Image 1 (tube, rainbow, N blue to C red):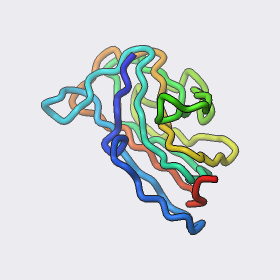
Image 2: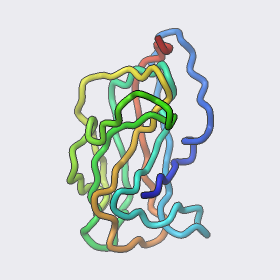
Image 3: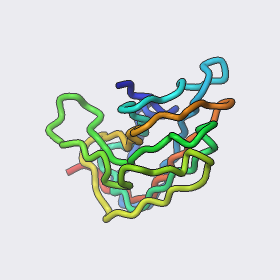
Image 4: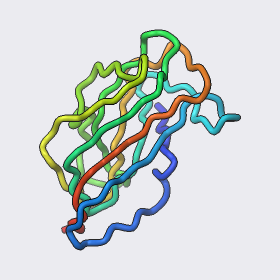
Amino acid sequence: MASLKAQKATVPAFMPNDGRGVFLTDKAVLGAASGGGLGTPVATDTIDFLVPAGFQLCNLAFVLDDCDTGAAFVFSAGYRPASSGSALPAVTNYFAPTGQTVGQAGGRLQCSFKPIQFDEDVFVQLLVGTGPAGISGNPEIHMIAEGNCRGPK
């Protein structure tokens, strides 16, 4: 299993604790490293997007290019702690259940969930169930997260 990191997944994020609403955006580029890509994901790989401690996540969407030359790519959307020493359990399908196919031809996945606050840094992750049959070019996966800056407890 590999953890493929989005562009901002390893950069500490500033999170004011004033309750204001914000958007967090990030992208992961798949495909050839020569084009800035992370490679071709396979089953059990995760594609990780960092959400900082103190963020109350209220709305989440993923916008995907056509990430598969065939029709094999499926995933779920969930979260896991960014720290390996955390007691927070990972929930691999909190935002979207296993079997999401929007990456096979491209489109938008609008997640449906109850708002959740993270009191530690977490990775919102796409957990790959079946990797793409192939990738053409360097398709992008964008995360768009809306929420409130509440500050960690």
